[in-house]
Length: 210
Image (cartoon, rainbow, N blue to C red):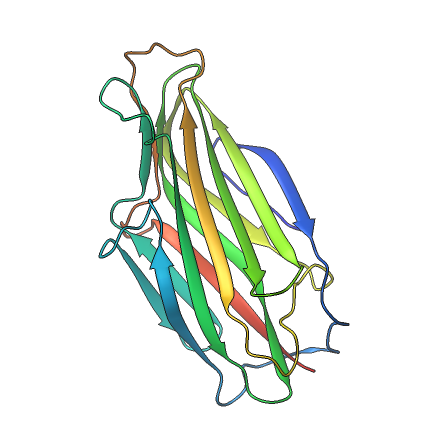
């Protein structure tokens, strides 16, 4: 099952539409020779050009760091600053006879929420052209002034596999939202997923033979 861990947060929604385009392969294998992960595009209001970086760790994981991924409400915030997203598209080189899936993701950041305010962190990932989509979301309620983290781990029966014999991009969309709720209109609340030694998003990839 998918699991969510947070410091003081509460789970708002957790859903997975796992319509794999074909039967899952028989067993997990080590990353095959010739497999490679390359970044195709990174864009969105939460990761403008030059503010996000992607580090690929071999053939089974990668990490995204952010310099300007922050949502806020309050007297200095513009009407659109309560919500931001970051869309990442990865080109996965898949050797013949293999397929891949996302097996886990961890997001980290910091939240400063006034009493009555709330925030939402959501992650969606899917294979280009596939019906299978995984979405996880988590809510935080104020008062909250602390670092936060969320960890999602998929079981073997929940993985969305790329179609065998086809090269499809892996698309990942993260989103942050913050709401003033019943807090004072003059109060500032924010949520960030910004680059520190511990902030950002980490993703794990597993491989199987077709």
